[in-house]
Amino acid sequence: MIPRYSRPEMVKIWEPETRFRIWFEIEAHATDALAELGVVPKEAAKAIWEKGAFDVERIDAIEAEVKHDVIAFLTNVAEHVGEPARFMHQGMTSSDVLDTCLAVQLARASDILIADIDKLLEVIKRRAFEHKMTPTIGRSHGIHAEPVTFGLKLAQAYAEFARNRERLVAARADVATCAISGAVGTFANIDPRVEAHVAEKMGLTVEPVSTQVIPRDRHAMYFATLGVIASSVERVATEIRHLQRTEVLEAEEYFSPGQKGSSAMPHKRNPVLTENLTGLARLVRGYVTPALENVALWHERDISHSSVERMIGPDATVTLDFALARLTGVIDKLLVYPARMQKNLDRMGGLVHSQRVLLALTQAGVSREDSYRIVQRNAMKVWESDGTLSLLDLLKADPQVTAAISEKELEEKFDLDYHLKHVDTIFERVFG
Image (cartoon, rainbow, N blue to C red; front, side, top):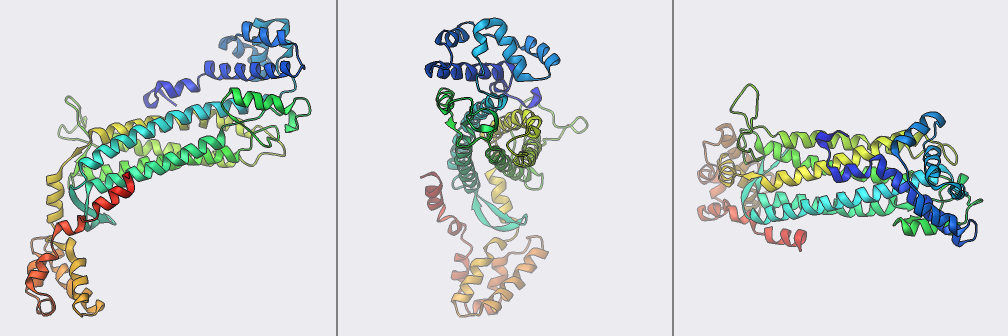
């Protein structure tokens, strides 16, 4: 997590000041519940809210001596609260505070990420409708296949991120649980009603069984979801990078006035933003495996997961937040070149219409094997000419073709609009 790839709102969630504020609220709400149950004096609970404070530097200084962050925090708060502070943390264990805090942080981070996806979806939808009927070549294996539209490419991205939004909403709900169950999770020294109260106040749900720590399968699924979203970011970024290649140049990142692409070559306009997104996606995916390995803790608990989560929690959410915002900006300002798309569509002499001729021959009574052989024989001539020959002209001159299909019927098979006739149907499915 470095400033270059960070945005302030997400960073703030993981700052020590925020973390200790959440800790304090957990402890104070728990003490309120204990007071209502008659376990601690109500005056003590009131004093904790009124006098409770903490200082990050002082906590760090205490921790340097006691080697325990939660104890250091409680000690510092007690310095402000005074005698009533002895009623804090009654029946609780450190994981009650740490795990519930992490749930709050991940839930808040999720809200930012969901808002990021919403903004991205809005931009993708606008550009998709802008280029709904802009014809371009579809490629399989990187090779010209059949015509599509640039709007369909964007509609695919929209549907993908809409699914990602649903996944993230589910992952947020899964990870937003509260555990205030005490040592080894048995509630022996704290009433389950305290947990329910803290959960309600902190916007969480109750963890059914915590074994002192919240089960890490929840966190594994959460970070796996972030990894999937990052992969979707990379997929779109990779598409843009390929489209910006000089030989293709159907779309490219916005190049601002005064921007420079190379220290050595003044002509360069490089896809630096989408290359950056590819790298950031690798980082987010890299946090998934440690989260998966955190699931297998010893018995009721150990803290092998702790050091991992202190790093991957901030890093994964901050990095993905930045990446989603950057992708939104890239698509918003993406330069699209319809004329170049049409030129690329036309450059292979009509080869993109070969399937229609194949199907027409089979409909006319020619076997599929013979139809394929006839069309491919002519198509390879066009291919080897680098598109200088015309597939339509070659087919018109092929007696095996003209014996089955009239010249007019052949010409109809090279109609570009034929390939776009169901674009509206796909858009209706995607956008409603």
